[in-house]
Image (cartoon, rainbow, N blue to C red):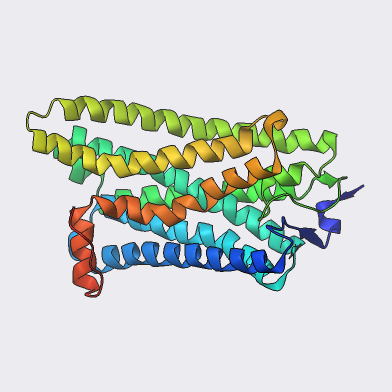
Length: 311
């Protein structure tokens, strides 16, 4: 038996054994990665450069795009390099860095999505108090709390995970160092400690989820009281992107970390990991810009070669 500090490298999941398929995976990953970089980069550029978008909603959206860029950059480059160079190895320090940044960025993103639900609640249910409750200082403090809390949470998780005793080798059945897969390598008595920590984390996320649900119950009640159909449509259009992102992010992430071992399989684990770690950073820019006229106009103004079809 040895703890993870005595292991110099881990072996990640290989997507294919044939060289042709490995190269195909590399080009597919590269296309998805560049699309995510472009989409999130455009949102960051538009919000940072257009003073009309210097509002709380777009400030939080800019933070979300930065987190999405970091999230996909934590896992994808190594997966692409492994496919290109026909290897599975990742150093123990690299694995620890992946675990830390995955927890940090995903935790910060979920906290930020909770803050964004509060932003929509105040904007629709208490519009006269919007400037007071969500001033620039308050927005910075909430964003800093989301980032800082996620940093401490990730630090504790990473330290706890890599102090486990590993009895089952060093092969991780995932394309990045995912905690549930590392736990499968641990001894039974050390597994329970991190499993308990994951349950505590899930409980905290559940509290955030309940807060978001309560916020949207109040939002929908307020929207349905708006007499104008156009007003209701505008209010719903600002809420729909956030709801879509939260639903996808929460459902896949919860299933990945809390699913029963009896239904676990390599294919299912891989699909779920892609859904919560790759799909949100790639599609969030599309979801948020698809029905957002202000963002489209800002992109056209800042980047003349971008032409987005009017909805």
